[in-house]
Image (cartoon, rainbow, N blue to C red; front, side, top):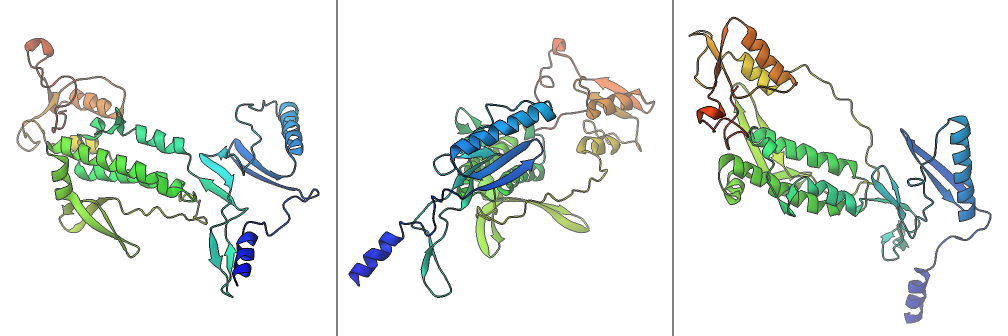
Amino acid sequence: MEAARKHRQQAHHLPSIETHDPDYRRLRYCRYADDFALAFIGPKEEAEEIKQQLRTFLLEALKLNLSEEKTLVTHARSQAAKFLGYEITTLQSNSKHYRDKNGRKNRRINGNIGLRVPPTVVQEKCKRYLQKNRPMHRAELLNESDYTIVATYQLEYRGIVNYYRMAYNLHTLHQLKWVMEISLAKTLARKHQISVAKVYQKYKANLDIQGKSYKGLQVTVPREGKKPLVATWGGIPLIWEVNASIEDPTQTRWGSRSELEKRLLAQVCEHCGATRMTEQIEVHVRRFGGRDRAHQMVRELMEGSLYTPLTLPSKEDGDQSMWGRPRRGKSPIF
């Protein structure tokens, strides 16, 4: 019995198929937009010949030059080929087993193609939420509602996870999740001028996803006569799905107005509370400039007869509170 066990252990280190057949060739082609990849099984000399034929065809038929920096011949077992943000390798692990219908153990992944998240991707994605290698708040979101802030972080994180759903090392995105969560908590803390611990006390929630419970943050906005708006952070399992769908659903674009347009069309002055039913509307201008739709609407509104423009004191008048960056915790006044 001991000898049989040793023989089985030795057999697990031997390939189950012929890996050095001199006459075996396979070529696969994958293209997305102007990026393409060729998977070739055969000698390296023939791979270089295929590359030269591609260079000649692109130059003579399409008048295009093949990029030498991006067009590489890579051995997938010892290195990784980069394509569409993924690293492509050949998997090899004699310790990964599964039981067949007869109860026998078989090696599971040897020789299969694997996709993985490059370490540089995790580092680059984290940079947006870091300052001096520490998670920091995002100043551009301080004037948004809590619902918008949480939903923004969740959408950004979900998009990255879903894109790399087919990577076998998807769990490495835990680092990105931690950085983004601390940045989110600090953004809410800076907005409300409270500590990060109080943010967790206020918004912490247990999220039930596919029968499992996850800790996260949740913001609920009640609405009269409608279901409340709920924005959550977390609850996205980092589970490898090799057969994940890669189809991008078509999103229907609705012609809804932006938050600024709704505020301007509400006919209520946010500075003095005047309404169209009581007196003339006043438009209080903090500063002009820019070419976007927001500033264009302000200019159009001020040109109307119903609006009396009122400019707040300038820097020379001594009032510095309304100039430069928006005041912490307060929305800019238009």
